[in-house]
Amino acid sequence: MSVMTIIIIAFIILESLNVLLLYFAPDSKRGNGVGVFDAWEESKQYEHIHDLMRYLVFWVAGTKLIFIVLLLVILITGTRMTQIAATIAMIASILSYFWRLHPIIRDIDSKGKLTPSGYSKTLSRMIAAFVAIYTIGLIISLVFGI
Image (cartoon, rainbow, N blue to C red):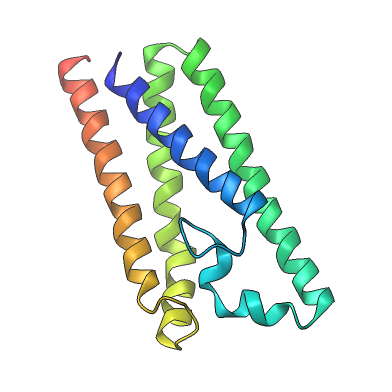
């Protein structure tokens, strides 16, 4: 099994768990459940706002599902070069977190609106670790051809 295959499978597993959590346990404070946001619970007081938040959570889950299925197709039918390109695309798309999402969640965390406090730092480190692992795997695959 190639390094690219392992990276793509790992991403599929992680994102599949995330999708299941978002669809079936969005209140969760584990994984990337939105229960960490105090505003999630507060929104339940206002049905129209909570409906919008639920819609957006399920929209994110659906978008993640599209990526999962596309990665499965790449894994099953793609050439080594297609898998390498997909890994580069995964790295780039994951890095987009630091452009738009991290500043927002860091601000929310600084205002004491995340439970547990400091979650933005934990999430940032976790995402940076994924990017590092995928980048190392990509380099190993390119340099050693495995």
